[in-house]
Length: 374
Image 1 (cartoon, rainbow, N blue to C red):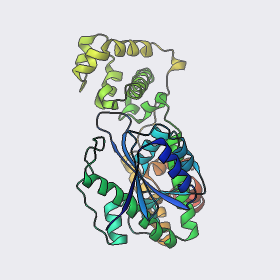
Image 2: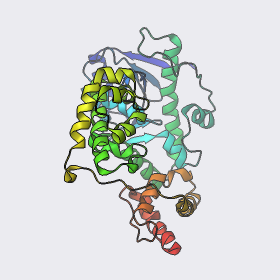
Image 3: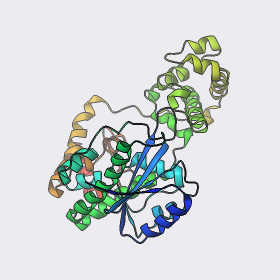
């Protein structure tokens, strides 16, 4: 298949193209990037398609992304992506903006009960009967010039993405389409709410085993690691390995020798940041009780698995009735939050994370299922 490929290598061409795209009802978007030794993704290519042609934007030569940011924010133009969480990071990093409204073809497949979390190649093959080449998914997108195979791969990706949209969108009943767009809006909103480094300690494994004084140390270490990863543009584990955080908070070494003996800590970390870590630990360890975090709730016991199964069944029954992928219905974290609100004897409260149509359709049924079990 021959695709009309047009390169955009300077700001003037990009501004001109964006003016054209803003007149369309939709554009398909894709990105190619590298993320090996960095915290943030490094954009290698941005692809735009309208179903007729593919434009390849070179982010290494573009300086002014404002016209593209305006396109992303234009609510009259549907932005079509697939499994787009990392693409959203790339676009936000390049332009400072995120696509809205957002139509994710992976979500569309789930709402049409074609499968959950379907890979792009599999979806293209199932819906369009086209088999995509797989050779370029992990190639170097920062090299110049790009190979002929890379260019073809990138152009075909965005071309078929537009074709997927033209097939999938008409199949969606209006209600499901609204749900899909709401899910897309939530993806964008979650990315806009950049996580607070001071709250990330809650996500560390086994953090619930620590007392309040130890949690104060963990909070300081995790927050510092997050800020340094962003400033240095390095992966978090390059700053401090994940497995070192809990023992650092638990044992609180007081000198470099003790620090070097902490489980899984890298010698480079001790050399580069050892004194800083010791000072962070020292300061956090002597915080007054009122400045320390509260202890974290324990994980649900094994006995709660029967209740979790009963709650999942609520979502599965509704999924069967609606003919959508059951995995779309209720995330495990939501069900666990619901159970933690009152386990074991209740009363239970719906978590704030259960929102929109899911709360309307299943909220009361979830509470009823727990009430019956009391």
